Amino acid sequence: MRVSKKKLNPNLEKEITRLFFQTIADLKTPQFIKAFLSDLLSEAETTAVVKRLAIIYWLSNKRSYENIRENLKVSSATIAAIEKQTKDSAGIQLALKYIKADEWADEWAKRIKIALGQEKNVL
Image 1: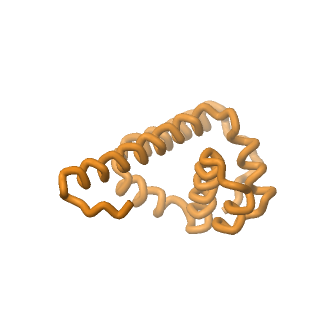
Image 2: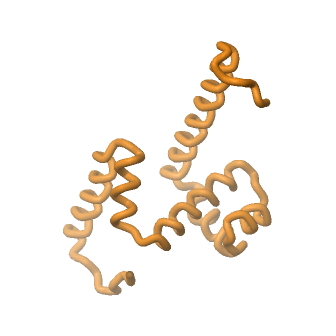
């Protein structure tokens, strides 16, 4: 789908944008959000957004451009553009904090299960 070059009424644009973000916030669970976005976005659009987030995440973990390029099948120019666009973005930094907090919680949950003998130690 192409985006029209014709400008929307600013008030209308503000309202429908608010509606979009509020809809996502109201969905609450990853399963509901996935169902909604899968119906709303094409497969190519979903892949582009997912790859963008992966690039941002891997850059925050100091992965090399080469590693990202090879694994995600994107160009170095794409990686550089995303890095530049998102470097000082408050929303991206907040999302990364949530991602890293989830990783930390998952790691400690595994350790606790191992300590309690509920899971085998595969470390």
